[in-house]
Image 1 (cartoon, rainbow, N blue to C red):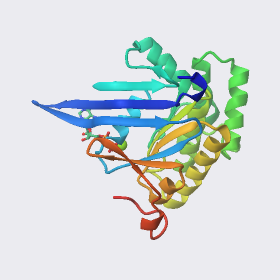
Image 2: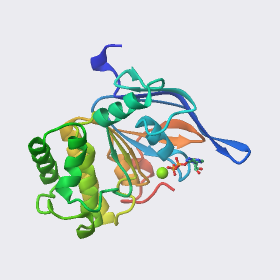
Image 3: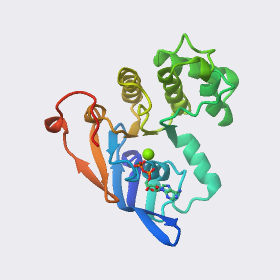
Image 4: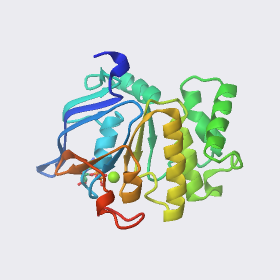
Length: 244
Ligand code: ADP
Ligand code: MG
């Protein structure tokens, strides 16, 4: 396939089994997914359906039991740990439900860190971190540590950190799941704005009906397989309610 038109992320017949005592639990039973450059996709499904498992596999943090994961057209299944680490660092940004910021570093430093680890010089890293944080309206909080910020502010720093190394793929696991509705709206707007502006592809797990509706596509994990959903608007009766 032509590299320029390759999907950012492709999953082919991905399975994932976990051993539970003497039993094998099959959580993913053959997941197929194609995410193209610039596409923003909502991943929904009941709690325990395997959304986090799928995101971890897509981000090379976990290996599938079967099937293939391709990033930018490149097969990752047989890649060794060193190559997987490099691919993950250069290609993927992660946002979690809980921010996972380092408590002893301020906002600016938390965003700089992935760039420094990737070999950027400190001045360039600081400039980019400041740019991202001001784009997320966090320019007044550069020197604040996580404990000195609200939940929404911490999550905006986490988004900036995920984008630090200019990934092509953003994976977010219920990024607003821990926030009150108003803050959730602000953080989601910031996330969507910067993703659209940057033109990267995103796969975002969410329980929020309204947020899913505002993405380009919606897929649901049902019984270990992905089902593409149309618009949810006809089923929606108001704002912000959950699927389940
Ligand atoms: P979701 O994010 O949709 O709530 P998860 O992907 O976290 O779902 O979990 C899906 C199922 O897989 C759950 O039943 C969970 O208990 C199981 N599971 C996830 N990770 C492991 C693991 N490392 N070992 C055993 N079971 C696991
Ligand atoms: Mg989860």
